[in-house]
Length: 254
Length: 161
Image (tube, rainbow over all chains, first blue to last red; front, side):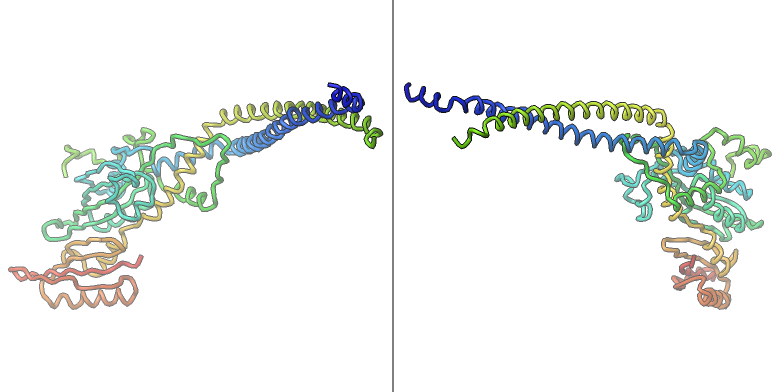
């Protein structure tokens, strides 16, 4: 006890200093260090949020600068080229329109269910179709008429909307199929395409990729194709009327 | 003791360090709070603007999604008209009985010949087209003679598009 008192007496003037230093060290270790650590965290998070806000503002600027009328027009062109659903009636209307432009008639039309290339049902599609990334609706039909007009139909098929692709062509020119007037029966298989609307828009801060020059050229190219897709805006019936022969009593007669 | 002259200095430095640190923390914290508030206001504003612009964004995304698809389809599209052109350059109806385009621009023709001599000008035309590089790899796939003497020949070639 005596030695304890002696030690206290000897170092009395240092006790206050020791206490101050100890409290300071305690304050630094338990107060300032965690405090500054949390400040650093907050600062880091703030920088991330600032970056996000900058991206959001850039996106807002980008979207605000887009011409809405032009955008509407582009979307309209693209959805008429590749509709958002299979729209089976429009396939027949499209083929009727293509044939009707040359005064030909279509018969024996059949269409298969649309399949996505990545699905197992689409495994029988050829390799080039597997890269399309859209739904493919195969169809088959017969067309009757002079060969030069059939040729014109085939030629115009690659420059119309909705996009259509004729895959195979069987032309019956034999004695049994060719009529005296030179009309021929042609069997054609082909495909049309559709792609549903995107279901998600991505994160709000994700920047939108700009349309490249090549994409603009593609858009410009297909916007020049005549739109004979019908079925998207309800104009089909009125526009198709000229292609049907009003004097024909049975419209389904070959 | 040696430390004696430094005791007040140690005291002052210790207290000063803690006070300065605390002040710095309070100031930093306040500054960060202000910044956070300002950034949050900007963020909310930008999100509100984006919500307003979301129909436009959807249209833009729709456009961006469809263009590559359209490009891919355009690449696979081909006019079958050249198949008919080359077929008609070889034979015309009623001799030309059928045209069957296959993959890789291959075409198969079925042609009916009344006599075998009629095949000579036909083969000559095929050779000419091949020399002009309009068709490639022509080959006589088969020859059939029916009971009534009608000769049917099958020819395959590739069309140079």
